[in-house]
Amino acid sequence: MQRIAFRLLDEMWYGRPAWGRRLALLSLPYAAAVRIRRTLFRRGLRRSHWIGVPVVVVGNIAVGGTGKTPLVVWLVRCLRRHGYQPGVICSGYRGTARDWPRYVRADSDPAVVGDEAVLVAKRGGCPVMAGRDRVAAARALLRRSNCDVVVSDDGLQHYRLARDLEIAVLDGQRRHGTGWCLPAGPLREPVSRLGSVDFVVAKGRAGEGEYRMDLTGRSLRLAADDSVVIDAAELSSSPVHAVAGIGNPASFFGRLRDLGLRIIPRAFPDHHRFSAGDIEFPDDQPVIMTEKDAVKCRGFAGRRHWYLPVDAEVDPALEPDLIARLSANA
Image (cartoon, rainbow, N blue to C red; front, side, top):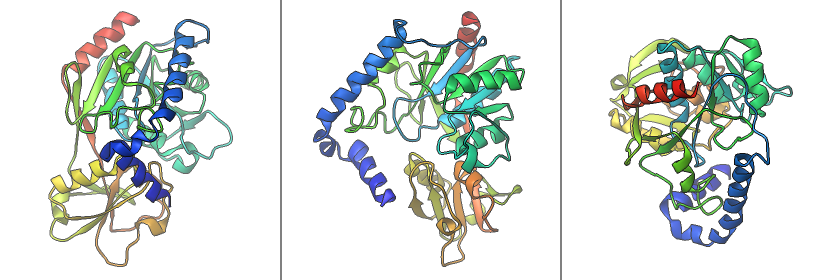
């Protein structure tokens, strides 16, 4: 039932906008509430908290996958190249921990602290703190580490945390769908919000004033043992199962096809809590998943379960522009 609802929403927002028109009136109060809330923070009627070091927020205005987490990992590495000691805060979305914030390691349980937090800790190699309250998470991160800049993975709409730079990430192919806010469209904030951020990064196809990002990678790693690596071409001789519990599964399936793989796709909702049965099939064909899903499946994955790690390849102009803006704000 959850998968059916996910597919219907995706079709309504991106494939059949006429369906969304029936809900367009419901989007108006949502969009108005969003604008009012932001105005209250901008005018100081609600308080934003400064934490004492620069804060860079990487987020999006749409629900679903845009490649935000790979960009966060790229940003962490970029900041290190310029002498910064970055740390990351995440929401810990769908984590079951009772006490927040929680410090996250590469081997932390994603069911407790959230899959994205574990993935950032694993790929970024930096201090990571997860927590619903972004201000509390940032302060806990600073107490736990010697970070001199905090990167917020998501959090564009969490205005309680004051920020020095905002980077909005969008899917350059799907753009803004219907262009409406929830529920008639996929937007958390109106498209006009992009005019106030510092940088817009578009995955796959960039418009005027945007920086293009592509996700690259063709090596597969065994979900149960990261040290086992093969080229995707080694699995091209017969069909493979492809599973994805991310915001835009079609983008992952398309990437596998681009690598020459013949796939049998199965999509799950974003942040799906996988069980062993979700990645088992009656045949003996290999199974390929996203890296974010692999961190949740590692404990019960077998010798035929692989994942595709990807890296963000970003417009070279973004790095000097971002560092210059960050230095100017310091």
